Image 1 (cartoon, rainbow, N blue to C red):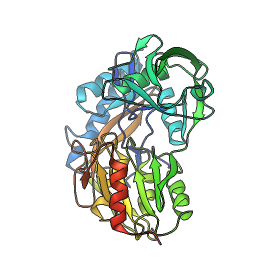
Image 2 (cartoon, one colour):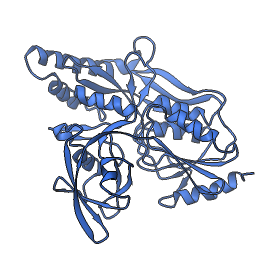
Image 3 (cartoon, rainbow, N blue to C red):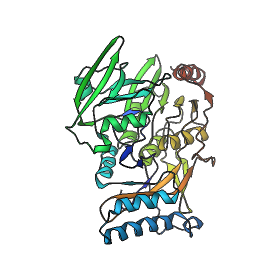
Image 4 (cartoon, rainbow, N blue to C red):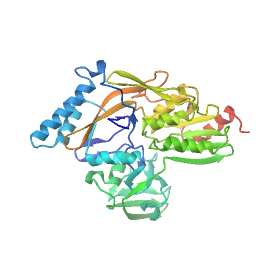
Length: 389
């Protein structure tokens, strides 16, 4: 995509030198970015007025340029300007950090190959280990407990902080650097020192928990996600009951989310959004599968582009949504490159579902509430939606 992209994705917030990445419990990559098509021509509307997003971008650019002229850090000056703007999702990234986000779009990341979540008791449980990754080679398994990272206890800490420790964000740790994990498995307690590595991951996994039911788990909307979903659908019978599992999906490329919607819709509106007050719309391509029984699973970790897709399928009556209220990240960020190569992002607008529902700060309410038993509820609902032949 040429020109400047618009982003719709929870971002990290700087607190001094610390770096917090919001990737919904995935202990691997930096946050995958989400982009909207760029509007044609200059942004218009009241939102670009005296206190609007356009002016805030100008203020950040001016602060960075003045700092550069004075021999000071443009990035630090921009961070102060973003902080003063009051923008909840505003952030500034170094050139290297921004390159990591671009890698994330391709499903590449630096890490050890662990997925995890926080349990009810505050502990961190490993939910998945990537085969062939440093963690996989070391024999770490799903179900193990992560007790510490480089000597720092992780019980009770937000998963986002644990992500930062694993990645070595405070030190900008590259591939090849080491990280020591304290682990537990039943009564066994041990440590493993792993070397971070450049890894790749598949954003879509497929499994069949019961006859006639296919579960498509989409972890993030990286490049190629929609094509993988379509390929998976093409290998299953047209009347196969399908679960689209978006739990823990923190977003990604909005273009991929829209293309995924196109796999289940025959054209029509997916979402509307505004950029500095200029109204835009996203539409599905015609020719999608509109008859396959479909359930979408969501939870509090379903964010951004994943919420956009959920809202489209729910509002269009294409799917039954089961789970818990989604995160509520429906704002649009536009990046601006600064003189030292760093990148500032500020919110320029918000998106809405086809029925006009505002997602930001509200999330999406499922049709049926469910917790750990969400998949079982989905199978029951699918039985009522249609029987496989």
